[in-house]
Image (cartoon, rainbow, N blue to C red; front, side):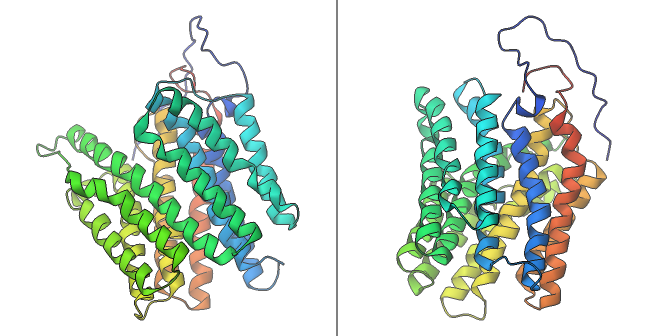
Length: 386
């Protein structure tokens, strides 16, 4: 793989859009992709130490921080970069990004110190409000559901803090999976089509039947709703089975095998594939099969969330830096480490396997942090804002 081209800033001409503050706050994806990756590299080893009885952290803390700490940070980074493009609005930058970063950090401190839990509840409604404003102003009806899902996650965080932590975490995992289903359905076929076309593939088109696209998000939402009302029941198992079929069939026309020589594309397919896998495992578990609930949850969290976040962050960071969409060998190694960690965590419940899975997974994100630190903390190579 070729290395990213050298960073040679191009001076900008006079423009009212020029940003003069800290480059890390020039776009929301910069701090939040870094925070998500660094937190993934830190929090999992901390949990492994707690799991071995060395640190006083609980399993509910681990689940909360993987969903409401790591995953939400990455989602924030993606949405803060994507919503301005969807709505043709100016991106958030400077003080408002700094406010969001501060609220996320305060939430992490509250969870680490086991006090003032309400502080953890400040980030999501603030993010939802800041994203809802351009979406509503542009009447971007296609994305009205995005701030609604963020508020649904906030309500589940309230449930975690003041009600049923275990139930809140399971349902939150399915809501985040719904967001993955929504976004992946848009970007994976498009990015695959464009990459295959550039690679000279004469049959580069990717397609999904419209009825499958229309069913995908409601199908996963039905799993979340059923889990909330009838948790780990036959009803939730049937809902998960139907969703797995819909999400798996949706992928059939995406030409996954043809992306095998394009790491920046195949990683998107792998991340998405964990979604129907996790839903199928939940169906088996809830319908009385020989699969544990934790295997299904880790397929959706360590697998779908962990791999898809890595896939989207590595691609978006390059694109927003003005760099070619070509990943380096260390980035590919990070992909492999996270995938192996997720698969091992899902497939093997032995304590040694759990330990190794955590080490592999967090090492992948540590490697990503090292590779992408300069990409996310230096100006764009083309001199453009963002």
